[in-house]
Length: 141
Length: 377
Image (cartoon, rainbow over all chains, first blue to last red; front, side, top):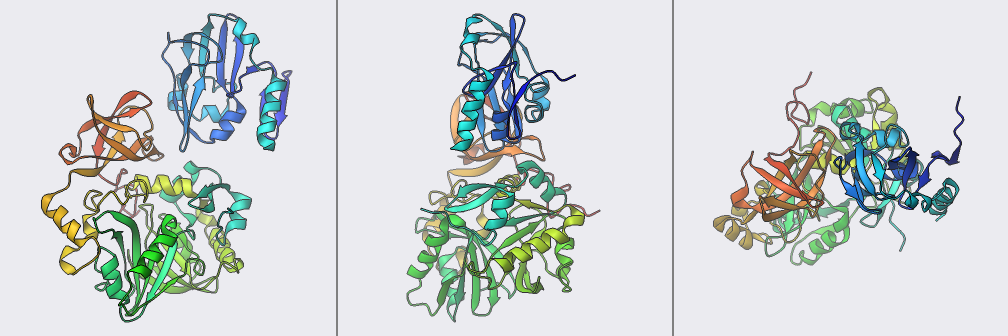
């Protein structure tokens, strides 16, 4: 049974069990790990994603560092780490199937699992309502 | 400043994702670059290319003026023949690349880049003193569509009883399509078989006739799953075919010899603008040349990326993309001529990483499998 709540703007979905960044990444807490990806808005804006450059396991990042890039035919976009930590797993499938980012941004299209060095940073990320309001503002421009 | 529009603007607005392109509001894609690209490689696609410039040259000196303006001999064109050529400046740099059609003994059509719509026309007029010729900018009177792909002929054939099979590559004919007198040329900018068509005399003020022709082609192409294609696929298709984009791969700072377009320069045939500089360059040789690079490592080269030989910076990417056919990054770049050797490994600096790439011949795809020379089944 689908119990998860989602905010919708047009055809775009924003699950409410995630926290977001103003740069359009999402983060889900899984124990002491954080799963990170790009939002439905980000994948929709990039349109057809044809390439994803993912970091190596063990890479340490500070909040705001680039975790890699996501590219469509026309555009390149950095994925910024929402929090500081060490990359413990990467979604290897994205190398061969970057379209997962378009088709399943919150599930199969996750990018990395990060072991956080300061979970406090999570509290500073955007709640779904705040993020959705921001996206709505972009659309109404 | 408001953007210019083509006859098809209402269609593009309804079905496409619009962007600004050299002053025009045009579709970058309708459904997506990749499906549109694949439609052209595997079946058929249609592009609105009305934003390009078109001028008619009429009069006893029309041929000799074009011989003087362009680097290739126009007066030797047969009636119903079209060729690819360049306009150069006095230093031999490319002002534009274009196609020239011989419509009759004394009438020629020049088709050139949208970005040079105004400058090419003005350049022709400025240089026409002493020539008995009328030059008319007909860009807004004659729409232009490209119907490209292995099923392009079958698609267009359903709209006319004239045998389009008789039109060979770089030839054109006249036929009636959707009750409009139309120039049909077997040319294109995709590397595939296909046509560029121009319904004669359909002014921008009366767009409905052009829309009717466009929609009829889409309708007749349904069995082949024809797709309207935007500028995104136009760019990836031409790049896979190794064709130059004006303003990126060729500019006023680059000569046809450097771009390896030697076949458009006919030095023997009399005077033209840039001839002296090009003759000197031919004798002395060029320092840098245009090459094709196919990524060995994963990454998408973009314009401006550095080309490296180990630690030495040797050139720059002028066009780069992800090739939907090869599923790899591909690029056009300029490097010193001593590095130009097919099969040689260089690298491209993509976002601070030097990734390996191999020098390959144009086109980038296998000509047995794709493109107008492919084996027919």
